[in-house]
Length: 459
Ligand code: GLU
Image (cartoon, rainbow, N blue to C red):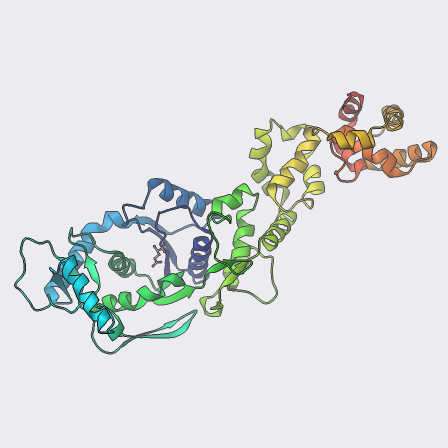
């Protein structure tokens, strides 16, 4: 049997970090089993679904590189199919029209509550064919009345729900549109989904969906309900307080592979391994060792994982991701040896924005802070830098070794310690004292660049 999984977001907002973890697990399980992964957009809530949300979800999936083999399918385009299944169920008696009015249902509910009974539909319309024909009926699923629904959830273990707990679910509204749980069932059936991986807020829907699948004679997939992702302090994540949209992480300079690596470890793990590639994750991943308790989102850890991915990244790939940012700053990376710059700076930040800034000051000195200028560009330092510029000018060989030797000799002759030269020098060359080793900076900038920056006044 080919494993087939799906990710089924509702386009009522951007792709949430929890949704991304669900997508990742569904995708990885399909890839691990050489199966298929489907993207299905559950857009039947027409009031809340927007094209903008669809686009942002698709963009986020692409940025994360979670490729799908089929889809995106849109439920709104499958209405005819849902309606024909409803007709079939009406014909075979597994569903029935219900003409009860809202007032009647409210009264029934109140009566049941006052009798301390569980509110549920009393099946008045099941066999009663005398209806108010002016009213458009809803369609209800005829849920079994006895027995239990059982499934072995791949995360939560065995779950058993008595049918007496379940109502005769409305599967089509009075305007004929099918309801959410029904569309999911028909889709999972038609799309031959073998494993449903989704958030555990859907556990309550599962017994209803299983009953409908069984009434249709459809195979029941396996279910894996993933626990929530909480904030570090154990509270629920909120749009207002926390970055919950996947694309906010892109803005923060997180690499997609680092985000996936970090998300993979929320409720799943492989020993003590913390930093790994997505290919490695796919090789290890399975649905049977997911922890059933909620995970906590640790932002510091995410940035650390990101720093490790940046550090391990091939320079060509790293340049590819930061180049758009550099171009925006008007930088042409070809003017200097970008590979050497990346080697020097890739360990100096835990996000791509910082790495971009670290690269940028090689090309364009930053505006130095007044504090730094006052502290480091004293009269003494300026005359030292002038002398240093002269010495550099006389240097015939522009190699790292020659520069190192010359710096050493210069400091000895001037009777100064290295930082006395280094701090003002960095400030003049790059506009910041926070640079990698200054002999390496000198070497990369090249003689002309260095002499021209040293001759410019800064304050
Ligand atoms: N559309 C649902 C959601 O976004 C997911 C339903 C499912 O995976 O079965 O929560």
